[in-house]
Image 1 (cartoon, rainbow, N blue to C red):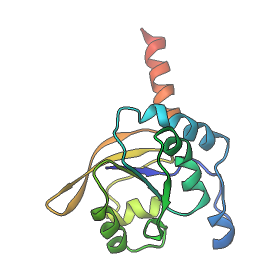
Image 2 (cartoon, helix red, strand yellow; image 1 turned 45 degrees about the horizontal axis):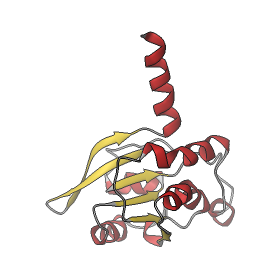
Image 3 (cartoon, rainbow, N blue to C red; image 1 turned 180 degrees about the horizontal axis):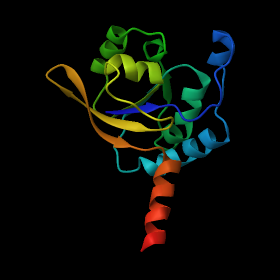
Length: 153
């Protein structure tokens, strides 16, 4: 399963209602456009997202490229309990991509796993627990690392 933190969306808004509608900024939109190529090697059956605009916008191009629809679930909201989120993740197939928020990563992994905006963790279920096994940086970071490596050779 792929667990994705939404791409960059600028500064938090002063009210929950305004923040829920916050959209991706220029860098976030660029990462969202690159996500289909960045995750091309991963099979996907479902794309599930927090209903916040920045999460849905992060995965729209990816879902479209796979002829999937974006399913929104409140269990992926920043204020959802870890139990609610874990129950949802337990229902999803291994070939699911889940887009959520920093707070959800903190709850699921007791603060031991961090994820930058637009980053993705490959997560496995082992003995009923979630284990983050491999990190995929945001597409913009992955490209800049590749470019720097190419410049050195």
